Length: 477
Ligand SMILES: Cc1cc2nc3c(=O)[nH]c(=O)nc-3n(C[C@H](O)[C@H](O)[C@H](O)COP(=O)(O)OP(=O)(O)OC[C@H]3O[C@@H](n4cnc5c(N)ncnc54)[C@H](O)[C@@H]3O)c2cc1C
Ligand SMILES: *[C@@H]1O[C@H](CO)[C@@H](O)[C@H](O)[C@H]1NC(C)=O
Ligand SMILES: *[C@@H]1O[C@H](CO)[C@@H](O)[C@H](O)[C@H]1NC(C)=O
Ligand SMILES: *[C@@H]1O[C@H](CO)[C@@H](O)[C@H](O)[C@H]1NC(C)=O
Ligand SMILES: *[C@@H]1O[C@H](CO)[C@@H](O)[C@H](O)[C@H]1NC(C)=O
Image (cartoon, rainbow, N blue to C red):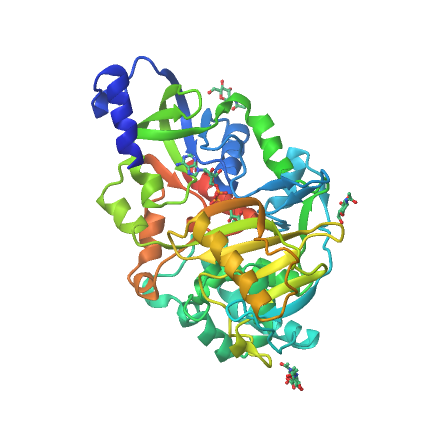
């Protein structure tokens, strides 16, 4: 729809330009570079810095928003205090610490506001009688978890570069996560894994262990075992990382810009880039192309995928993630309301909410009335649907008497909201057995195009940076 309306707008403005003319439009400025990078999130922005500074390539980075950073989102509250409600911390993994140093970002220790968990079924609104497993059991379960997956770590971290051929994929990686947990009796690790990042994998009864591990893998397990750390900028502003990248890349970034039409080939690319607010256009000629955007149909439409490319990216399924900061007088200070199905009572840690769900309401600070929430949902979930789920969860807890009703019957206040869109790209065990990963890897370099981002590696900033290091070494061996 989007590209059709763009096309007709162009028809009106300049009499009708056919596709070829759009790439040879004299009113656009022209730019010739070694590498064009599309998407300035974790994968694209890091690749841009290294291509420019370490590979001495001329580059352009095309980013649809007004700033770089992708899932990093900051919010300044009523008291002028800055909060991160997107990416919260960086794993000390791969090149992350060295990259902070290169950028001149001083690392600091994340500060956590200790919250008391309260287990509530967000559907019925009723409290659930359960408790956290003893710390010793949690440690033992994480030890076992690591012992089982560490031998395969190289298959999916950072990225699937060394993934085994279909007939040699370890059966454990293709087990639905529930089965995997039951097999190794690591139930005591499930609560922490889920609450930190594994919820992103969606329904853990069905999600394959491989994809749980791309959301919550060895770097996070090692964190829980005290063998690895997490850090943030000492400024506590994660956007500092991307601001420093912006400063280094300067005018090599085209902001508020998207590719609307392209011609790609092994020998080079022509991209028509349109700037949304000022309406300017640039025709970019690039020898190589790096795509750092989620490989959804809508995102890839302007890139004219061929059959081989389409067959790969069309296989992906996604979760949609929303994040917001909310407030309401009924939400209890100092608490973390944890969405816990009634079936989880008595320590059934594998009984988890299923999409669409909100994992928790987390109070943000003693002097604040704000709570941070996320929504993990099926593809196509809109902001309205996601906010409605937050409201109905709160309503259920008030109705059941778990939360005090407010004096006035007001609704939740949404202070800020961010739809992170499609994430956690995954395919079925069947597709993996049919060689999906090999076909995915086969796209690297095909038609002069290279791919980065969560769908090709994993769901953490530091993993993407480590993935890019390998990608670049393959682009320019
Ligand atoms: C709420 C939340 C919390 C998270 N917390 C953490 C955390 O604490 N630690 C951690 O390591 N990871 C965290 N992650 C995960 C991590 O941020 C992602 O895995 C990572 O950002 C993925 O990087 P990416 O390059 O694939 O995509 P993104 O970072 O999303 O980058 C894509 C970029 O492309 C741009 N773009 C999209 N479409 C187009 C287009 N058509 N044309 C041009 N530009 C386009 C986007 O604006 C964006 O800047 C979190 C993610 C979310 C959603
Ligand atoms: C970087 O590339 C430019 C242009 O191709 C070239 O003139 C310069 O010598 C290169 N510098 C290094 C350090 O390779
Ligand atoms: C914790 O581990 C001990 C020893 O293995 C076991 O007896 C106990 O049942 C476990 N408790 C829970 C809640 O898992
Ligand atoms: C909660 O569960 C524990 C055991 O799991 C039990 O001893 C206790 O009575 C239960 N409390 C309520 C209020 O049901
Ligand atoms: C509120 O608490 C936060 C974190 O606990 C702190 O950074 C901030 O300065 C406090 N703000 C006020 C107005 O007291």
